[in-house]
Amino acid sequence: MKRTHRIVSLALAAMTAFAAVPVMAEETKEYYGNDVSEHVELTLYYVGNEYGDEQMIFDYVNEVMEEKINATINFKALSMSDYATNYSLLLAGGEAIDLIYTSGWCFYADEAGKGAFNEITDELIEQYMPQTLESQNVASYEQGKIDGKLYYMPCSKLGFGHPCVVIRGDLREKYGLDELETLDDLKEYMMAVAADEESGVTYAYNASLDGKKLQDLFASTGNSLITVDSNNYFFYQYEEGKTEYTAEDVFCLYESDIFKSFAEEMKELAAAGTWSMSSINNQTTVQDSFLNGTSAVFIENLGTCGNVANSIAQSNPDWNPEIYDLNLDQVSTAAYDGDGYAVPYTSENMERALMALDIMKNDPDVYVAMRYGIPDYHITLNEDGTWSQAENYGTWSYGAAVSWGLKNTTLEMDQDNTFPTVIELMNTYKEISVDSPTVAFSFSTTNVADAWASVSEVYTQYIPLLQLGLVDDIDGWLAEFNSMAEAAGMEELKTEIAAQLTAYYESR
Image 1 (tube, rainbow, N blue to C red):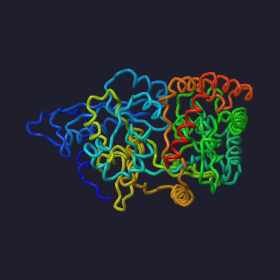
Image 2 (spheres, one colour):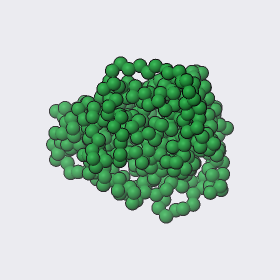
Image 3 (cartoon, rainbow, N blue to C red):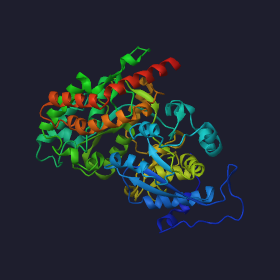
Image 4 (cartoon, helix red, strand yellow):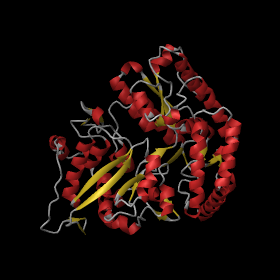
């Protein structure tokens, strides 16, 4: 992949306390025929934790934005520890926000249903995002539509729906365990770590705030479940060879034996001390715990697991990180990643915001800076199209949170020392993955906004504790949750999602 050298020559300047100063244009400035003569300041919120050199990256991005669209972006972070509480409050607060990260797991359907996001029409894409129009598969747009309308610009990267696991190979070998093949093998390893007072780690798995990743691994993927709503209340169970699904196939996970069995497994692990009994209040991310050596298990998608394993291989090679997919006998679905950016209704510069997004998604230099880091400072660009970690890689990281909604398959690069397991699993996914029957379905909560909000409150009160096995009476706790959820409007949600799924299937 060819790269211009401008980003390299600007790296030192970006490291200084550069402050972009608006330049008054004497002549008409244009971006693909759009007048950008008037300088504007944009506000962008992303969900994720900050990195030490982020201002360097943002200064460079703004240098390009000044040049191309006469704009400056003010980047702001919503940390992973409090985004769930503050995201909706931020959008309801009236601040003039021009771009904000969103996805299926980050309130896209909820907020779109409330009218928090502007619709992004085909005409807007054609006029203000011409590079995206040319480079991005329209199938990714279709997946993001709600009631036929698109309220965010999704990324353009095909992903696969399997959570993977990274463990400490040195500890596995210490306990005389074979390489992992099943979820039971993982449990055995976690139990062994928890029982080893000389392991050097605090917990086998340093759970943080909830056990959603545990649920994804043990309950959802482990039973070939495919979700049909953003909060993961409703699923259907994929059956090989079955091509026709109806709304009658959908069920609420928390009313099922699958979730009850999962909760019982987690209670067993919690009782063994594999994670803290106060995990529900833990503000340290699972990833940070694994990287700093205070835990011995990390669960995420394959790409993130590969990045974490590579980092460990660089910083602590004696830990011998190993990556596993323990559910290869279960269905793997292929879909465009749901990450993206929306333009909130409070934006006063929607057109310029879409232009800025067009550049961040497609300009090779900007993309490399935001997705990987500054060449010759954070990373090294190799002649074969791969990248390597440079001296200052630790102060920026591949896949930093601000870049989640920008992912573009055509500009992605492989790391030079990519784990062989990552390559093997990716090739396997390409062979075995199937299209989800609801790949283009998005549940709109517009007609059930009050019930959705009320059930979500009940969920927050009960489910995270069940996911982490932190309740004494699982049957009683589940019964109380379902009773409270029904009173809050669960039946209303079931009726609505059935109606929308029926309409979806009839339209295909």
